[in-house]
Image (cartoon, rainbow, N blue to C red; front, side, top):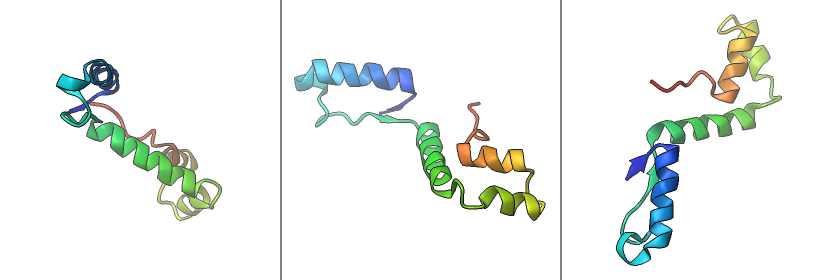
Length: 80
């Protein structure tokens, strides 16, 4: 089951309280695709931090410095 963060927390609590019926070996609970994408992009942003990424994108006129910096923080990904 894939769900958003508040539902994920509830589902995990249910799994931990009723192991026999809803245990982790019976039902897989995971974050939805948006959360996985944001986590992956933030990890890439951490790797690229202070690597010259922002300067390279802004000097080549691909993106402004602010936009390039937002890529590192995955703030360009929004919920719809």
